[in-house]
Length: 251
Image (tube, rainbow, N blue to C red; front, side, top):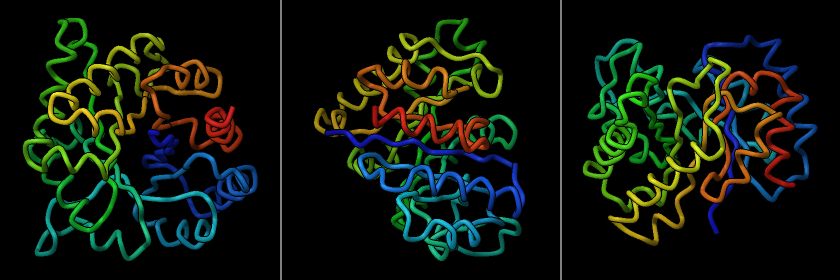
């Protein structure tokens, strides 16, 4: 059976006081729920405090990015081994904001994916199309290229220790959301694409949906047969909303 997962992506938000308040509620409200898996991916400076807060709970944690380099004179970069020092389970790879704002192309994303797995981190590989690409009818082509660059670099077997997140770029932070059927269509395409390489890995792969997931639409999205949870942006910063989304997987 495929694993279910909800991951909060805090992006560049938070401070020590706000984080403490947010996590107090999340830890308390999700305590004892062992059926599914929950995680938060936080800015680098807060990894230590988040580790201290979440250790011995049922909530995992991780980072939002990682360097493709293992060590060296790369000022400002953070390596996968450094993330390991803070007990990270996950790291987000290839988020659309990294691709569009910081020039990460498919090859760089694939290198970061490999670097993460070399240190036993679970990459959350983000794929997705812009509105312009959707309007041109090339959604599947774009996602195929994003996915296959990683598979060609790391091998399809690597997906056994990874998570995929479909995030339509046009729905991230815009308030727009792909309809459940639109999201399901792309999730099926992703699963089928993996299936051309290995059908068993395709069946086992956890594929999340991201893009303005809220407490009000999570149940409908997560009810789709190929959507295994969500990568949650803005709603992960509101404790009650994030808890409600997590609880959706247990209903």
